Amino acid sequence: MKSLSIIVPCYNEEAVVEVTYNRITAVLRQLTGIESSILFINDGSSDRTPELISGIAALDKNVKIIHFSRNFGHQAAVTAGINHCKTDLAVIIDADLQDPPELIPDLLQKMENEQANVVYCVRKTRVGESKFKRWSAKKFYRTLNRMSEVKFPLDTGDFRLIDARIMKEFNCLKERGKYIRGLISWVGFKQVPFYYEREARYAGETKYPLRKMLSFASKALLYFSKKPLLLSVSLGFLAVLVGILLALWYVFGKIFGYTNAESGFTSIMIIVIFFGGIQLLTIGVLGQYIGILFDEVKERPEYIIEHTTNL
Ligand code: UDP
Ligand code: MG
Image (tube, rainbow, N blue to C red):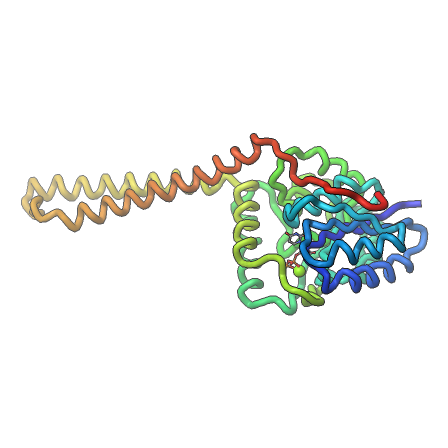
């Protein structure tokens, strides 16, 4: 008999976890010939989430919990889930019911039919999210794809079904800054899409405010693309070209007398500001990559587990 884990990262989800549990178990009960369990990762919640899920786990031994020592972030929580899965299959799903658990049987069916290793869920629509979020997410996935050496499916979050082979390879990846949906694409094997309508958050607030969204996006870009560095080189070339043209202009100006060297204040200021700007910008880009190296060489663990339940 095959085994399945449902990985659910939770950060301050007191408003939804019980409903989430009920909806997932209702779906799991209908599955035949598959042994299933739920793995909640409590990502350092400061509300009643830990009590609520502990209460559930006390009654249902098929509910396992990993409690982090503090908030380590969504990607760290999912990573911990994958690291601790000993099952043949796993579904990664958000706690807020934006990804309907009722689709799990369809995902299993699709994996079976297509003999795939990954069934990733592509959002046809996203309800209940701001226009800005939908627009920026769309732009982000397309830009990332253009910049990255690996190609990713568009409009795809972490909601997906993966098999043991994928988990095994994923667990070998040593980088600490994990952009999970990118890494799973990177691993390869047979990956097939499943189209669905993304629902609105059931209750509670988004845990991804603009600041976190931007840092998530820049992490994905920096970990999967070296193009920003190349962009610095292009800017450098542009600056050199502008420099040469200006030099020619002034030299010939001096010779033929169409410029007046003494009154050069404005042109000098423009050049100084322009080149200064380009230099700061490119140093900034370099700095971003050095920052990543800095974080990675420290080799700190991605998360610290305080305790586990039923695991
Ligand atoms: N989450 C987490 N740690 C965090 C932030 C979010 O475990 O630091 C979880 C959260 O509980 C939810 C999922 O990640 O299950 C996605 O978060 P959210 O729904 O708030 O993001 P959005 O859908 O608004 O992008
Ligand atoms: Mg959400």
